Length: 442
Ligand code: PLP
Image (cartoon, rainbow, N blue to C red; front, side, top):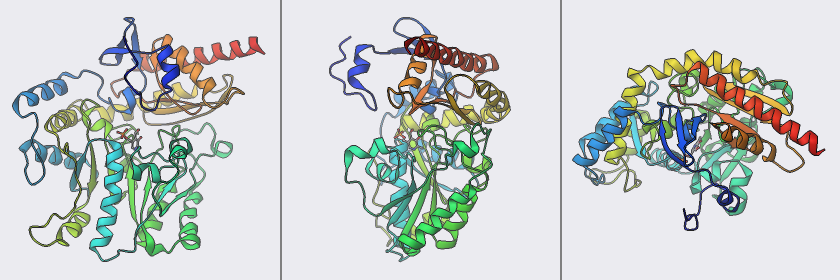
């Protein structure tokens, strides 16, 4: 296979191409690679294949839709399946989210949500609200807005000049106080107060349009918010008329052991972003959800006949994506997958924390069907040790995400108990093997 023509995203192109890992098919919990090996999917593809691979109801719905209506414009035109997909999504959304704006990815959801926030304030005459506050270690995709409000240093530093009028408050990771915590850590709600301090010392509260937060930060290595933290952020936003955006691109659709983190964590934002699990990863699609108040404010501010929100994509509500979304949401409901995630969560937690005490295991964090195993960084540099572990796991037939020095696990919600054991015992063996090899070298 000639690998030359492709510039791979978020990859070490040179290193990868020397020893490529190529997946050729997938079914249920497993990928098959080009050497014919079965690989247990420990990360739902990229946090998205929540109903497992190759679900027939979903693949059939896409195939049938492609024969019926492959594409149709959606600007001042429409198709029935676009409205139906929105209706189904809104039905399944947390209470109070009445309208869905479709995008094609989590990154587009991030930028769309920031623009909705600006449009909403402008429609109410608060045109001075132009600033955004994100968090250190936050990830909101790779478009300009999302990169700017995001706080993962490596994703920002090559690009120098991102959006102005953006500030970041600190993340909530505190291994000293909260190491090896199960579910929401006990300490740290007071970190939310940094938002209010920052508002008063560096900004006029009336200059801030929105605060954007992942209820659980996935890409930064599974950072679960401390108890009470999100509620305090909510209260501060409400007090100052600032919109709160939850980026539920990872946490939506069952990942935290219930339908949405908004519900499992009991804090409701003003704007809710999703993607990934919306179509089970089959066809790119995301959405931004808002309540009627935000929608009506923006739409009613424009004169009759005018475009109220000058934003949208050629592929907004793409018919294949809509078919995939409707079928996916049906599968989640009919197979009770969110309930299943909640039922399996204690087993998953116990299996993840069974790795405590192994060499170099610095922290373990988890919620629902997601866990992060953080290792001590070696002298070779960030991610090198965990990278060796990840490679050994892959060779032993288990795939997982690597982010910094953290191995991130987020299997499809159809995972069974034996597969959960297999995931964590494979990691345990790989950690021991890497520790033995480094002891021999030393
Ligand atoms: N927001 C969050 C919280 C994410 O985790 C991701 C991707 O992992 C994104 C946004 C970006 O999504 P996409 O890669 O679909 O653009």
